[in-house]
Length: 231
Length: 248
Image (cartoon, rainbow over all chains, first blue to last red):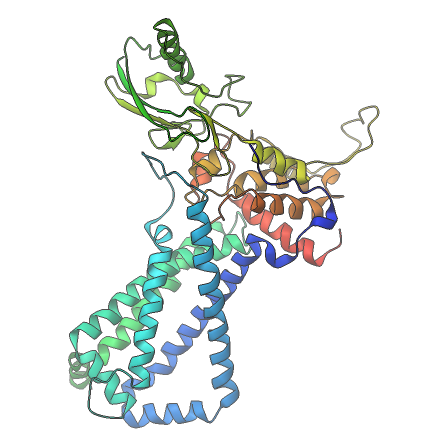
């Protein structure tokens, strides 16, 4: 039965990026870049609550800081490209590595989040497309050219609101596995701190989703009423 | 005890294969799982049928020859146990038992429940060794090794190479096996000389064998009959990064 040819000499050692482990490092680091961006994205978007003028001032401020603006753009575009290039490739290899599946299978340790990474990731990518179309005004929910008005109009429309909220849940699931997984991949393992890795992934992942959902809901009509009655 | 066995039968690596159902009666709860299969095979031979092929050797849980995915779990339902050390008292009278081979593309089925695990041998050949000048065995105490380091190396060395990790892994990855071997040698002073080339050669061979990529499901450490933990995999990854920045 032919297997892989045996590597025998050090001269045959492949370069760093041909290792599957190194592709996983690229996956981990690009994931961390995207999470960091999403926290910044949330913080920036809190100005939505201060009204249209404040939001437009924020957009102007971003445009007047091209290094920050385009720097972030390039970083997240690259990270997304790497994430989307490696993830499906590994998913496909993993599927092909078991040509015949088990009839009976009793999983003992893995999580649902871990088993649905490809599904949650694909959903998030589709959502990202819709979100960009929404923000850029390619998807118009209000006969206005104002990004602010279009956003609020979108959130007022229940299918859009549902999509945004469900996407946040998918994000939390994706990050619950991803943020734990990156510790292992990057070799961050220590008996004294290992018990903190899962809670970290849960808090950072679910935290981001809750912050985002909160911000979205406060931008709906009901959310605005709530703010109005509180002030 | 009476059991219904659904056993994977496959004539050779190219055959399609399917489950064959056997009723087996008068199984003693004190039999090991392999002894139960021996009884099944005695019956098959006496009636002129082909016996079920399965791997076994030491039958005392230390050689790594036995395999079998029993009711969906490599080495069966009892934790930290090889199939040969699994006793029939772990099963209920009348229970249906599904017996499948390791299903990993890199471990092709040879016949029935026997798979070819030479991919693991090639990974070891690629770098799982320590080069030493032979001669009289040196005195054990001439090379001081801290107790906790020796313990960790020993825990990794308990890997018997059975392949349950890859069989259990949703991604069919061999990472736990490779990581155990790398920790076993790489923690000890004798293993330092080839530390860099070892991790790179073994991982390159592992990738070439067609295993999947670790996705941190941690199924391997649950299935490992020696309870080797996934911390070894994190350490292996560190060793790989280290090999790119440090010469030795």
